Length: 231
Image 1 (cartoon, one colour):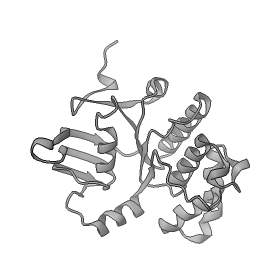
Image 2 (tube, rainbow, N blue to C red):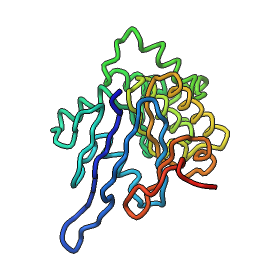
Image 3 (cartoon, rainbow, N blue to C red):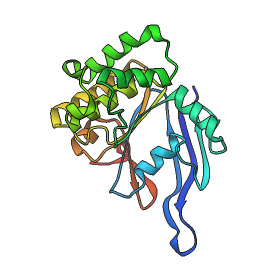
């Protein structure tokens, strides 16, 4: 089976000349179907940049990224948008919720954009809200709930479409320990059920302990993965 993500010799720089800043240098990484993968590293190590490149939200300076075998670095904006709509779900640190929509309506909006048939909306909304433990907040708007609850809405919206690839940037950053582990358990269940493949970033050492595939970004490169660490 073709890897969901294959990254070959990816480099990314911003600026030019004396103001050029190298963020990633010759990154190689393969992510197989139905894996839960975590990227870790210091702030500024390039985790979010790499996530944005995988999600076709930015383009590499050099190298190529393949999504299900298709090279995407030369895609135009329309092709990138269609790829994201059809194949991907996103959890951003900024949440990206529509302020005047309820929790249910925010999730419905995501389903509509993804082209999910209307007949499936009610079930998918209910299922995803229950998965993140927000059934009692379904009719609330973002300004009526906490930052942690908003983050859980963002997770629910992303998983409701059951995307082939879910990209999550610090999806548990605003959550208490109990809820953070609840969300990761939900991610693990989605992977176990072969629903999706998940790539996330995190600083949380407790969460890193329970994720099987962990890669460290260090000095602009993938330094090691969890399976190679000798204790």
